[in-house]
Image 1 (cartoon, rainbow, N blue to C red):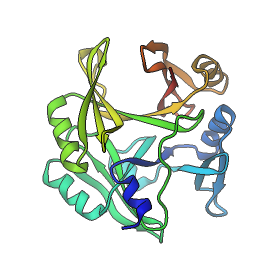
Image 2: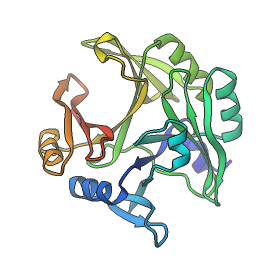
Image 3: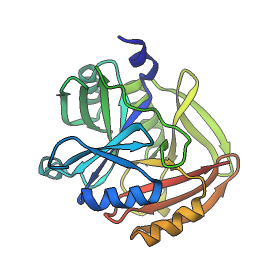
Length: 257
């Protein structure tokens, strides 16, 4: 194992936008945050996302294979693992499922697409030559992940067994918020959905850093997106909003305090 891989194990290391319209999605995010894209071939079907010179994710059209598995357009979060196969086996053993893989992605690494017992989708990444990009609190970069679930205790236990995540709690106005941690450093938060969430399925939410949430919301509307939850403040966290991009993919904005 290289030092680069070891330093990222258990952390989110890459994101991918699975969309119905790559061209329009690229236009939206490029105008919103100044992202650049780098097409991997002449078709433009798979494009690497860059902020400045750093590649932090990719976007591609939702393939029929994933549609047949019930996957819808979304942001997909990857977690760095030492062995995609061993982690995939562990996921199945404790009640999750593997939708795809593990599959070798050239010399870059090995990926797998998984679901937890409640149906929240996430991905595994076993790095070879490509280690990805860790979350960064810089405007336009992905900066945080949050899991929304129904059965809190079972969900916490599942992910602790899968990734070896430690568990801590942050006090908030809504009570204690569970945090998944690696070496005592938080990597994601967990929220328990109640009846106010209706029939919304369990899911991972990707947060993007914003220098001005309210200005970004205005831009989202201008560019054809929708504001799902207007900006609101969480003490000691920052200002948060939830939006849909023009293709209906949900994401959150975070202006850290």
